[in-house]
Image (cartoon, rainbow, N blue to C red):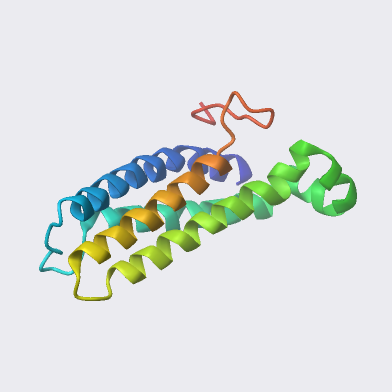
Length: 154
């Protein structure tokens, strides 16, 4: 189960990053061009980003709960905090990812409120942008000491 979940989590990362980049682009364009908010009340790019992030969170929680590496870190948390690799997987990766998820949800909720379309797009752009930055920091890129392959499980 862990291997399958980790592989899915690794691949869905790309959906999150691409959807996030598109959401930031669409919201920034709406903000800077002072576009009207869609009459439907929804911006599809923001909704796709939100759904992708929620799917990634679900996969991440399952991977975290079944990870032998995280289990080892939790068994000796003091020692894990002194080991950069164990600390990354047990604390930093999850913390940065959860911060990103919260930013996406708060930004989406705030963007739905108000009458001023420019302010709504600005909130969506800023919250989505900071969330995307948080996800980029949380990602174990191959060139990092804690790196994993770009497409895990392949």
